[in-house]
Image (cartoon, rainbow, N blue to C red; front, side, top):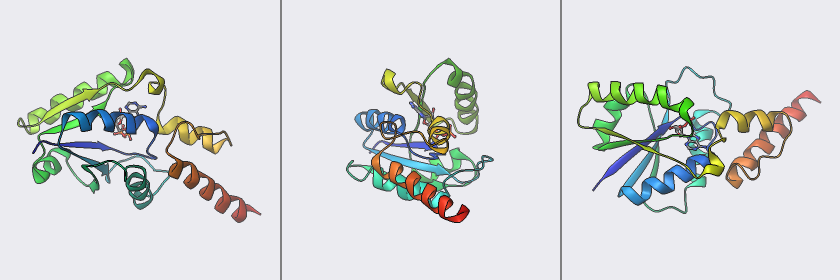
Length: 165
Ligand code: ADP
């Protein structure tokens, strides 16, 4: 059974993430999406919210699990008996950081490969960051994220508007 870990912040999951997931599912028997808990980033959606959104957005896929991890990715990979980590590459700007991480992870645990997958071109400009920014400024993100995420943005906005009023 070939297991891959797809780690990230997923704040929130976008259609770009799902594109990479679908490609990974063609290569592996099971993909575990692993939300990183110890990130220095200050997330917009809480860890629990990100996990719930990921579970809802991926419920129609077979062989996908959603989990979270703390500490070193390589330790989590060993623990799950996975053989690979999947990362998405959008542009050259992703490359330098990803190469550094992949080579460092190999130094820490040589039995694991990092597999880079390229999304459909239409997702190369898409990031969780940009989606959050558009939503914050009142723009429409319907075509960029799964429907559950669109709904979650609307709920957050409603809570904030009520709070301000
Ligand atoms: P991280 O904080 O680890 O970068 P992200 O949630 O931003 O986490 O992304 C997780 C993974 O998904 C990364 O490998 C990232 O490059 C990839 N990814 C994010 N958005 C896209 C996209 N639109 N197309 C392809 N890969 C993507």
